[in-house]
Image (cartoon, rainbow, N blue to C red):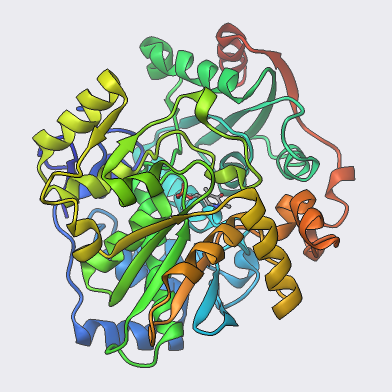
Length: 475
Ligand SMILES: *Cc1c(COP(=O)(O)O)cnc(C)c1O
């Protein structure tokens, strides 16, 4: 399988070439040069594999269609090591629960940090360790986080050979639970850095280091951001697993609703659908930061400035631009890299938006690709959390609530609607209490984590300070 850039670069690359890379050299995102097609017989075989042998075997089947530079026995072992009941709390890995009518919740948030990012990040940790050992290389992951991504990365990379994680976060701005999750890690290769500043200051420090190419090369600086193709690929698997749980035959269709921010999760659904998974609709749910809802309703994609990016009670969806969205637009435009580059490389940086309303492809977003969208606000979130608790005794987190609210607006008779549950309520306890008057349940392994010793250093918002710190810890 070859990978190409959404901005036109066709020079062939294989999976492991792009595994440790971020953007393509031309600034685009990597995609496979075609989507492998699954027919009825494949679906029937995978259904049986999933039910009889489990999630890890299904993951191996799907991943092996996209990865031709890791031997099959090794890839199988990596999947088996990643998707275990110990790590994900249940042998089903992504169990489906019935909510109401034909709405189901697919639990993606039973991993180590209780958010769906573990699904991909845990695999990435094992892939990184494998590939770095094979090359005899090291990698220093530098990141900025306001919560979910940083902790998922740390729990995926802790104790991994060849990898260190330097994670900056704004001092005192994460919830006590999130701080405890990250700062209680005692592994030698994990470095928590509390920056005296806000999230943007952390990001600026990371950017400043990445722009220093000599430093970057010398200290092997890398990232684990959501545009990494391996993360997206890992997420394709649970669309199939959800489908096999919600249906009995391959003649049936399902729809998915996905609480969305950077468009990574739902883009994996798009890939699954392009492979031939019988998906009726892919419903994009946004919060008040509705860049994506605006696009699917009007054809206008308008990125926001930080002043227009709202801080909401579903914070992992607080984005000003959707970093994976370029992948879908590339497909929508018939994989025209020149056009995609004109939109994302030129128009966005020049005027901050583009408008596809008059483009013949735009109507195909819904008709051919199944995309529809909706938006949810703080008031909707509270009402949905209260209602699912009072009517069904089910407590859902704020992001999942945005999904349920929007899913209810897009039901079709006879088509099961699967809402992806992207986090557990305990991560956002304050809003749950606001909605229901009750504290959410806390999984046993997290009881008392706020009292654990913390391993974190404080730092001024200064790129020189972080460079010195990295250099000192890479001896
Ligand atoms: C990251 C995240 C999202 C958004 O997912 P994208 O792939 O960025 O669209 C939604 N919910 C939670 C809890 C998350 O952590």
